[in-house]
Picture 1 (cartoon, rainbow, N blue to C red):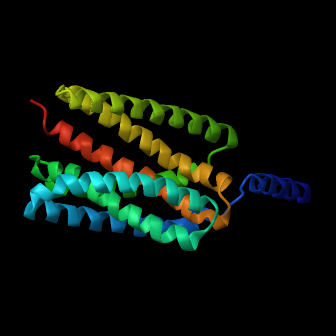
Picture 2 (picture 1 turned 135 degrees about the horizontal axis):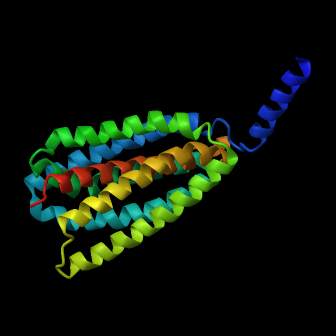
Picture 3 (picture 1 turned 90 degrees about the horizontal axis):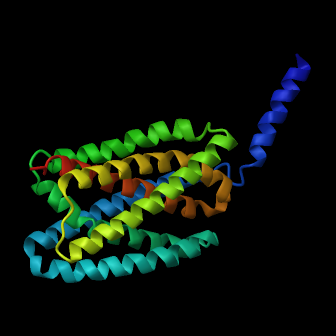
Length: 242
């Protein structure tokens, strides 16, 4: 009995050695939540601008988009160095700007029959349910399964964004994506970011130290924002088919 207990303890310790930041996710979660709230505020502000001064929206949209990209690279670099006092206001501003950038999609959702506020709520609820399930699964993945899933999701997301860039290129030339293809792209996006949510709980404690909790928060924030986007895109596509 004693030898069995010692063996189990050795297994637990061996697993623990792979974690460079065993508490990084618990430290990151409040900042993930705060970032999502700031994004909602940014979107609300964007909707107000779009409704009251639509001519001002597009110029400010492009400014927000470029500024958010710049802030993303700066803040992620600063957060990786655990310089949290500098990274925090940068990430807060990034979250607000992301909300403004999302205004167009949310506006389309509000104008789409059978989506509207309820669809936005469903997308947000889907993210919450995903978090609960992903936490349970991702925290208990074996090293072999976790690494395999991580590589698969990483390759899938890269392929997805290549497809999105091609789609954007066609749109700029006036070629719009057929409804069935938009449904397929959005559905794949949902599946990939659900997988990314699972992977976060496996990868982040093995990647970031406890002091790098803002880097972990940024990674999780991006996962759930993208999941929200693709759920909303899917609902819009399903309710916009001819």
